[in-house]
Each structure stands twice: as structure tokens, then as C-alpha cells.
Length: 152
View 1 (cartoon, rainbow, N blue to C red):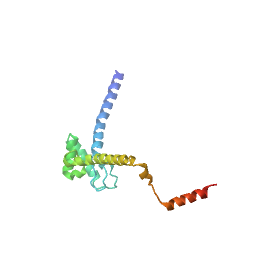
View 2: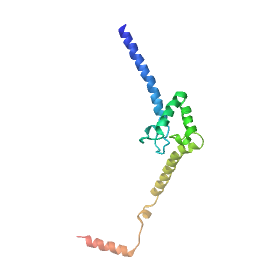
View 3: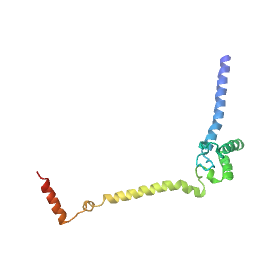
View 4: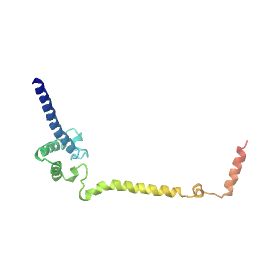
């Protein structure tokens, strides 16, 4: 009987720790999706200003928003309504914000295509034009003199 109570106590302790960890993980996840509004351009949970006028208040708002609202998007919407869309660390996938997600990939693809075209063009240039055929009698005279001077 004593052994059974110990096992039940251990399982209860483990399940209570799991429940508290999920709220801390949710706080971390949401806090890393928000920016501090003090002007430091840092993630809310990583703002390291001593006596920052914004981060402590925003962290408390995040905690109270999590307690009031069950969804992550609802909590983020509260911050967007209060501070504007600039409070989000990453742009949303709605409307014109999609451009911010598409532009880096499109730029990379365009650059890769441009490099491919340039390399292909360089590979098909004949050897004579690469080395440059120079028909200069003065240059030939100098080469002849250099060959004579360097012979043993």
C-alpha cells in the first residue's frame, strides 16, 4: 500500500510539472513572437535594457493576456491592437505582408539564375578572345629579346 501511494505521488508530481511547463513554454513562444517597443529592436523576452520602460509592462500584459485569452492568435491580436503591427517580430501571412516572406526567396532565385546565365556565357567564349590575340610587332620583338637573354 505504501509503495502504491509513492507511485501515485510521483505520477501526480510529474503531471503537475508538465502542466506548469506548458504555460512557461507558451509564454516563451509568444514572447519571442513580439518585439519590445522601447526602440531597441529586440525580441520582447530578450530586451536587456536596465530599467527598460516597456519590456516589464509588456511582459505583464503578455501574462494577463494569456490568462484571459485561450488562443495564441488572440493574445497577439491584443498586442497588435494596442501597439500596431510593428510589435510583431515576423510579418503575418496576410495581405501585403506576404511580400516580406516571398522577396528573399525570389531574390535568391533571381540571383542564382543570373549567375547561371553568366557562367554559361563565360564557358562558351572561344579561347582566342579569352587570351586576346595581340599582333604587335614591338611586343614580338621584346619577346624575342627576352628569350635570347634568358637562354643559357
